[in-house]
Picture (cartoon, one colour):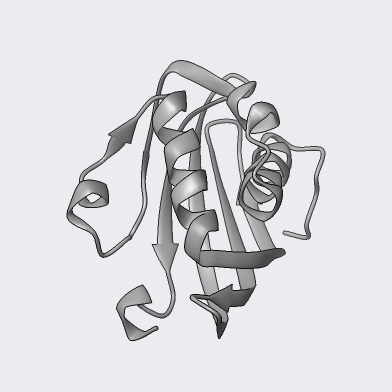
Amino acid sequence: MAWDANTNCGRAFEAFRTAFEKGETADFLALVTEDFRFSVPLPYDEWKEPQAGGQRFIELVRFEREVLQVALTPLLQLSDSHDGVTVFRAEGLLGNQPYQNVLTVVFAFEGERIRSFHEFVGMPLKNY
């Protein structure tokens, strides 16, 4: 499916991208449910388990932006009313070294709100 910013998946990814590119989390947090949760593939003990809540998402964005300056480009979107998948390219600097990767984020929706997301990394971050 072509990229469409007017779907639940498109709106979710645009807010996700704004959070990680600019550090602005308000748009993303406005879309999440009260019981929002997420999983990210970071090679650190404190991030290995599923995470919950908007405050923890803010902490994730701050943590990642300390070491990663990145631009996210959506490549592919698949979605229905319950779930959405976006494959995207991330390019920038990780610890002052060039970084490039292809990742996937899977959103679960409750109506028009994000109930959860799970991120998958193409190239393991431990390789950087």
